[in-house]
Length: 95
Length: 95
View 1 (cartoon, rainbow over the protein chains, first blue to last red):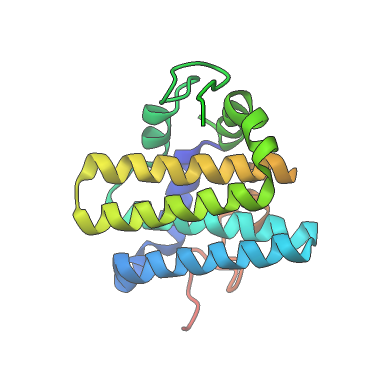
View 2: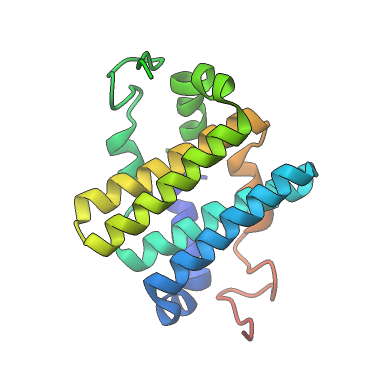
């Protein structure tokens, strides 16, 4: 599934809810989901970890929908087979 | 671009770095990127907002790579054209 198709699916399912909740509230849900992912990673149950990854990308898509961002275009514009910092693949940045 | 293709691209670019950094460190980077997205949303510059969305999905894909999660499969398994809670499209959950 394309990133944009997933974002469209989230729009069909949740745009009315997401719009009512607004940007700040939706961001907070996304932040909560990231905390739940952390807890699942600590716990170590593979099924739960996968569900929490799904929730994070779902809420990220919801937030993109109500802020008018095309998540796929944004991702490709910044990351297009080269590291955006060192312009190499694989990345050879010195940290 | 498919979600799995984006994840594969992140693997080509960053797997060696992500593996060295480990799950905890990569999660912390992801959490930092979410904070940067919040700051960009507050600031309101569309270009910066798009770049921060790109960073969040990129670091989420990196974290998925080093935890052995297929982000696309996880997303589709949980969200497949119906709300996973009320099983309707659009969602009709009562909050």
